[in-house]
Each structure stands twice: as structure tokens, then as C-alpha cells.
Amino acid sequence: MNLAFFAEQFVAKVLPRVYQNAVYKGITNGDYQGEIKKAGDRLNILSFLNSGELQDYVVGTDMAVQQIVDAEDQLIVEKRKAYNISLDQLEDLFTYATDIPEYFIKEQSMVLERVTDTYVLNKAAEEVKAGSWLGTDFVIYGGASGTSASIVTTATGGTITVNSTGIATVESSVGVAENPRDGVVYFAGFTNADLYKGVRLVSTAAFVSPWYRISGVTSSTQATLTEWDEATSGPDFEEGYTLRGLFGGDGVSFPKYGTGDAALITQMGLGWEFQAAIPTAVTSSVIYNQVTLLSEYLDNGEIPSEERHLTVPPSLVTQLRQASQLQPSGIVDIFKDTVLNGRVGRVGGFDVHSAAGSRVSTRVGHPPGSGVANDVVLSAGTNGYQILANHMAFMTYADKWSETRVVQSENQFSKKYQGLFLFGAKVPRARRKFGAILYGSF
Image 1: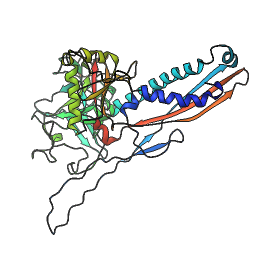
Image 2: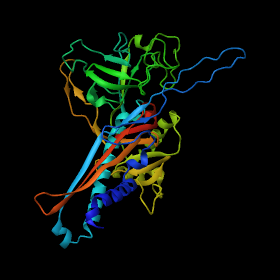
Image 3: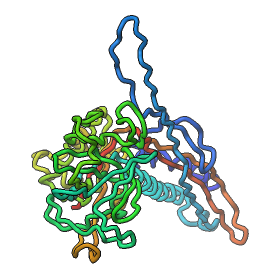
Image 4: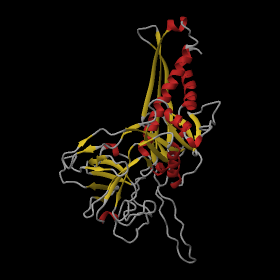
């Protein structure tokens, strides 16, 4: 390879290496319309927030017309990464010049793999459907009388308020509660650790609301909500409400107008529940069962069984190999000759990808607490991995080398090899159900 043409050769050789080795290329799709020309460009992704419903046809009677909501989500090319490598011309002449270009290409390929994988996996974890998180839930049951939690619908979703003492400036006024799921006492209100996860109302009458997405934390006692897909209208919404299922259900079925009881938001004794508030323990004895539950989340969303992926840190690959359900041979080695996009095997209907280093994102769980009312002391929450299970259609990704060039250094006998790489990713709202998260610690 000639260093005089290094910029062009760099681009030609780096991306094929990245596309083969990086995890993101194996778990995302490129189904968008538009062309990347510069940073900030918007690419269109077509999706529909509701599907057509079949109706009975009566001869001589006009059919009802159902409006299909077209959510043309836009992928923003938001990331810009550049390289600027300087090489002294004397080194080019006298120090193993034939090896220098290949070394640069190998090293920069690995850096680009790590940067893009980390970006994609972090963004994916923020967009998974509320209700499709697997972890330890935190339940605060309502009292025998009085409403402990309530939801008011808004034009864009709703606002949930929980058991406030009425002191707006005191963040800990909501107090603490023992979690019946693990016996630990946690802060009972909202924190930033709950963002983008699911929350629902739980009634003493054994009714629950659907899982709503926490879109913002206003205070310890109040948060804003949206539907998992941010829809505000459609055939499955109750009249006058912008959230589905406010008449409650059994946790699985939420008939449009419930059972004839009053709306769940008006019932007495309501409590609330955070989904996957705390990371669950992941060990070789339970990992296989956890994988099958992730598969169940996708099955409930009627997601195709093919092209499903599970992206895990190397330590979890080891646990999968040690799982008793996969013995004696361990995880199936389906890529013995070439490891493509980090794939190391297949289990539970998922292609398993190993993402080393810090690529698999982490976040802090809901904080434990002690004390009462306005005198609550919070402890640090447990840190957990956000392990993504998804179908190929979950996230759309786009990238492009925008510019490459060779520049002569003004005050040195050297050249600078420069390039600009543009990329971005998007999870369309309607496709959030194509993903699930195992929020775990190990």
C-alpha cells in the first residue's frame, strides 16, 4: 500500500472490516429513504402506529372507514467522528513503511467498531417498549382507603402523581416502601433512574393499568407518561382519554371499555409499580430461563421468530455456556470458522453477539432508602447491564464517509491523513415492541 493514497485506501478498507466485526451491523437494518450528504441530514423511516381492523360486511351497507396513522419517523445523522493522523515522511522511508498503513487500518477499524457499537446499544436501551423490561419490579401497594396514585391524561399522554405530602420542594416527601419482590426498602417516588422504563397503576381490586412509558421526571412524586409508542389516538383508545387501558385489565388483556367498572384512575386504594426498577441477578442457573422470557416479550408483540438477536458482554457468554440447559455441549457454535458481527452462537431463538468492553450499556437502578416522610436518606442504587434482545427491524442505522483527504503539514516534513465519518440511528416508535431488555447484574 502506498501512503500517498492512504486516505482513499483507508476508507476502502476500514468499513469492510468494521461491517464484518462490529455488532451493530448485525442487529440493525438500513431500511430508510434519503441520502446522507452532511451532518444533521434527516432520513425517513416509514411505519404505521395502528393497523387496519377487519369488519363485518353487510350487503347494501356502506363500510366504515378506518384512518391509518402514518408515523414517518426521521433518522437524524447526529454523530460526527474524524481521524487526523500525522506521519513523518522520514518514517515513511526508513521504518517498515509497508506495515504502517495496515497497522493504522486495523487500529482505526477497532476504534470505529467500539464507538459505533456503544452508540447503537446505548440508544437502543432508551427505546425499548415499556412493558418489555426484565428485571426486579418495585411495587408500592395502595392503602385500604384513599387514592395513593392517580393519572390525569393530557394532549400528549398523561401525568402520574403518587402519594405526595403536598410539599412540592421536598423531594423525599413520598417516603419509602418495602418491596414485596425482594424484601428491600426503596425510595417510593420517581428518580432519573426510572426514565424510559414502564410504570403502571395497581388497584386493590386486582386490576392494573397497562405499562406506560416514563418520559420525564417532574419531581419525586410526579412524572410524565406516554404510551409505549407515543400514540394519542386510535381504535383502541377509550373516548376522551389519550392513554389506552385506563379502565384496567388483568395485566394481559385490556378491553377498550374495561369490565364496566369506573376507570381505574378513579378507583380507591391505588398503588403503583415500576418495571425492572432494580437489576435482577444473572447467573448460569437462571440465564436460560431469562432468555426464554425475553423471547416471550417478543412473541407477545407478534414479532417474527427469525432474525432475532441477543447482545451480551463476554461474561454472560460464559454463563450461557455453563447453563445446565445447554449442557453437555454448551452454547451451539454456529460460526466456527468466521466470527461475523460478534456472533458466537445461538440460544433460545436468538443469535448471540458478544460485545466486549463497555459497549453493552449500564445504568443505576432505583435507590434504596431509609427514614420516613420528609426525612428520607437515599442510598446508591445497584448498577446493572442493559442487555438488548431484538428483531432486526427494531433499529435503523445509516452511515457515510463524508470526506477524506491528505494534507501537507506546514512546519514539518510530514503529512496528515484526515477523514470525517457521519452516522446515526433511530428506533421508530411503532417498532419499540421489536426489542426487549434484560436489566441484570452479574
